[in-house]
Image 1 (tube, helix red, strand yellow):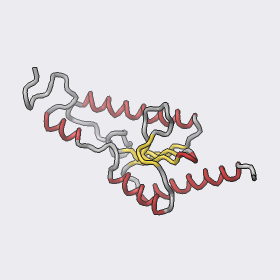
Image 2: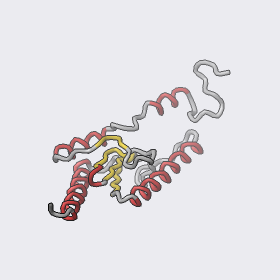
Image 3: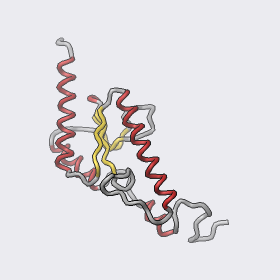
Image 4: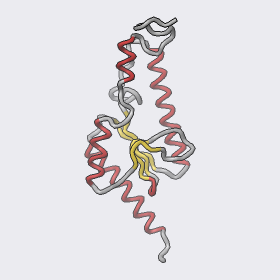
Amino acid sequence: MEVEGQLPEGSWASSAARRRNMQAIRNRDTKPEWLIRRLVHARGLRYRVAAKPLPGLRRTADMVFRPVKVAVFIDGCYWHGCPDHYVPPRTNPGYWSDKVARNIARDRDTDRRLGEAGWTVLRFWEHEPSESCAARIATEVEKRRSAARKAKPDS
């Protein structure tokens, strides 16, 4: 029986306060995503937000340019194991370290599966400068659009 304020045995959170804190973390529309999207939009590019690049793949990209098959991910340093900023947790380290390792493995699997389907995957860390991320996105989208125009037979 669960008592108000107490966590069930084996809970993923070490305290009720930690649980509330972790549940409040956004998984989309983070500040880095919002800044990059704003800059890309200002360059005249249009995209889908938090969309599935492939119908059968239960994964969403932060930005999807479907006609040219470009998927953009802005990864959080903690949740995706940034080599520069990830700090292993001191509380419940077994669970959280395993969670981050599973996230990294899923990211690599996503990259592989999208690549096999002909997609370009662009990944950025949340700490990277938004302007340089937007510039790389715009360059890749324009490159793929240009290649598509060249490949299209004249009517």
